[in-house]
Amino acid sequence: MFFGLLVGWIIGSQQGSGAAPPAAAQAPAAASSGTAQSAPPPLDESRAAALKSTAQQNPRDAAVRVQLGNMYFDAERFPEAVEWYQNALKVNPKDVNASTDLGIAYYYMNQPDRALEQFDYSLKIDPAHAKTLLNQGIVRAFGRQDLSGAQQSWERVLQVAPRSEEAVRAKQALDGIRSAHQGVDSGSGTGR
Image (tube, rainbow, N blue to C red; front, top):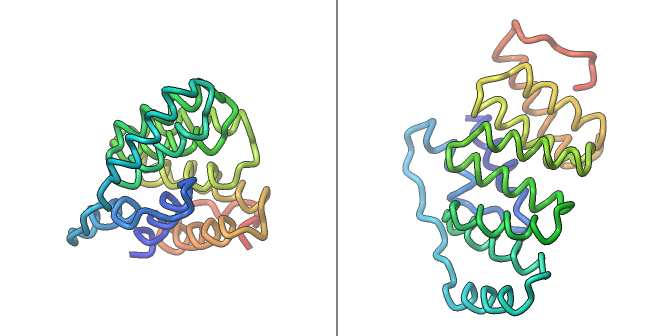
């Protein structure tokens, strides 16, 4: 149960729109617990059309492409979100948030390896990007069942952003892993 809530916060918190998509954020928790999910918020088709028009008129505007990616992500239309995040990165390849959002969309499309590759790209842009590290830990833990790798990601969050909300969540995840899996190395004490 704890990990489902953690996944929901972590994955959902990355969205550039500022609001975590409730259905998308809870999908891993609901799928693992067998509970029913609420429907995703509907896509505002008129707003999407207006943004697409703006994107077409402004081929160098990465922000509008990110907005479209976020809209499609929030509506759980992940293939379209991926397309817009990719387009945004073609315009601005150093946008760590768009890159991380792209990785999250891959994760929701059941492509954890692509998600992790995208997070690696994000971390080349900003090795201390706490939200990327936090999401990397989630995908390692739940998409790849790599608890040791997840632990490394979350310990890194504590190192790079010790007073952040991401650090609070990383510490909770580390504590959960350690209590549930006594055999997992407790690390260097960075999780205190």
